[in-house]
Image (cartoon, rainbow, N blue to C red; front, side):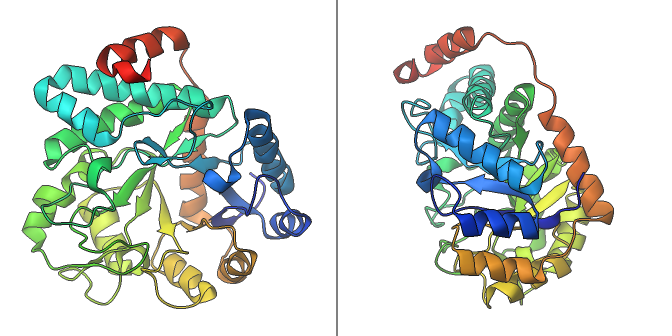
Length: 339
């Protein structure tokens, strides 16, 4: 792997501006992420993805997207059908567990078909947060359910469906966003729940799926662990909870540094994230000045972080031989509107 910096960056539009090309060549992000503003028609997306990889000289540089279904779905018709959210899979699972698990796998395998044909190799899915009554709707119907077993079973099936199609899954938001009573896009939530209840309810899906290759942190303060810092910038949460309690030894990326939950300027945010033990700094909105600030304090990807990154990339390199039409037809038996 050509030396890369410990960051994943977005871009401003549907093609790279000259200043972005120069910046990526100089700063060498490990990966990239796409949002709706970057999405046009299929050939444009393939060209954008190829140009990103060309800038860093790595044909396997991962390109991420949030393609869950429901309201968090960057690819829309005609590029991909409007798929159901995680909550719809959870409702099916509550009626028939085997049907729910199968539908979750099928949906994730369809995501893999949709993404792979565009050169996109990583999906920020499954959502393993377990909401509680009254929590912010920022998770809401994105969650598979309000009890850990549903989230574990459907999260596992979703991750396996993505990996079967050669797409890297990213479980989120570790160690759990379901108790946040504020939307982290705009404010920093604090969770005061006792540790025993967090273990039973919030941490449980991440612990059950701690073998997965990649996870995204939560911009949430867990006062019982670290009252002063959100998980994303807390060495105590990263080391004692994520790496220790949960036992996750995969590649750990921050949630978006352009969200308002994190305080400080962008160089300060990047330095704090890496100092906490998070492997990769994520910046999504494509604002050039902000990306420059992130890059100014982001160091080379090396040591354990590099080993985790190399291991994660192995999940992109193999996929099953599957009949897309047959999988779409089977999925339509569960969600007819997506036929």
